[in-house]
Length: 343
Image (cartoon, rainbow, N blue to C red; front, side, top):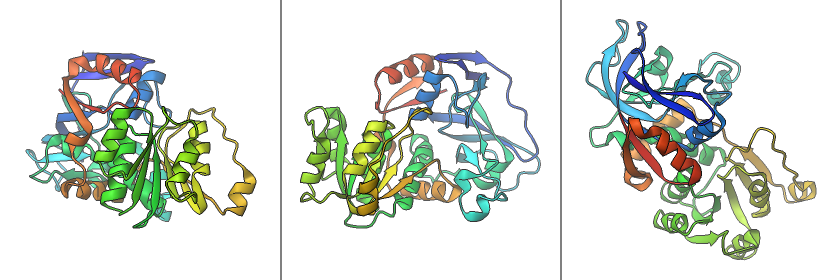
């Protein structure tokens, strides 16, 4: 089969590789759509991801497709079904899984290889995190559920309530998912904070009540506070992954507010937080990593109900052979919308 192989920093080659070997509880999926992701762009730039992928390795993790082979012990799925697979599955047995923190599983199994003609779905993902695609959804719609599940978990963990004022900082695909869901599903009033006018316009179309341009405003915190009668927002979502915007997010909050540091900063980053502000204003600081099977199911339901569709986030299709050029483009156009890779 043809597949993209990550060899290191900015090194991807589309090659002919053997079809994956199948275990008795595995399935083989013909990939119909694989979506680009900000995490994939970071991996491409850095050449690895300590938790998810170490080169040389097959690449990509947001996918939907058709089952073309099943192991002899598989009973839940059959050849011909349209399915969407999450990129991980917990063990269900460790310290964290027993405490309903499956995203922190001590043996979290990751699966890569979406940028390929076929992908093996290992037994544990087949058991816990593989789903049939509802008939009315496209493959690209279904492939959105992995990043969407991360967003839903972020909103759940931050305890967003109807009527809350929420600032979403960073308006790439993830930030825009926060905007759409916070408004459409959680009933919040969203203030979108971003740099590019196109992103701000998309955020408004997706339900943001207000938009703050970081290109036109030097006092970002003051601009957000002015939109909440000077009090500050109930919740701030940082979806950029930079220490300075982590700090801005904290200062946007009202007393008793909650910040979610969703955007992952580089590994050697440090943030100085004002202790008196945290203490006397009773600020709650949260961070969200990854997703759980529960949130994958919740994301599939949100897509099935039409709260999120591929046309909102995918703005072009490219063949697998163009993946290197696509990654280079996305690396130089930070926050750009998703590309559907069609093997």
